[in-house]
Image 1 (cartoon, rainbow, N blue to C red):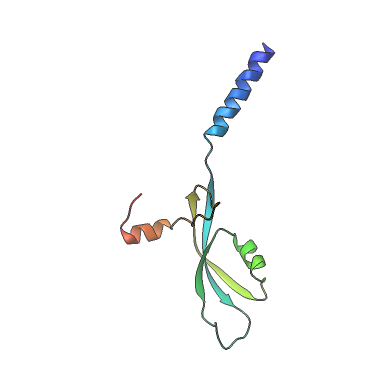
Image 2 (cartoon, rainbow, N blue to C red):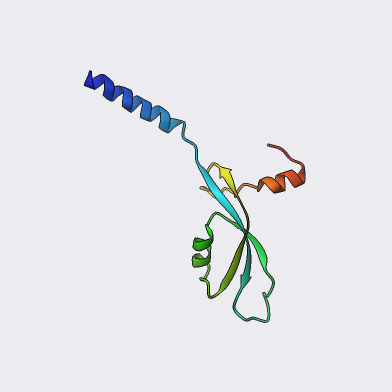
Amino acid sequence: MIFSLRIFFISSYLLYAATATAEYRAFQYSVRSTVEKKFDTQSYLVISTLDPVSYRAYHGGAESLQINVVRTWMCLGHTGQGKDICQSPESLLIAGESR
């Protein structure tokens, strides 16, 4: 009886693990340097998988960057092996494409 329960739970776990999918959140930021410079005074748009706190810390901290979240969306899959970040749903609607 105990052996059959173990087999049931192990097979259920393996079946569940085999059907698992990955997803990640993408962020679009408006980034501007806070350091006084004669060049690079404009803000620019960046798409990243880093959350706002991690993005700011990775790229120099609050003393060097001002970031504002423009939008965020979920992507299916993973970003390994150099895969590009998926497009935002809004950009797909503007382009007239559908999945």
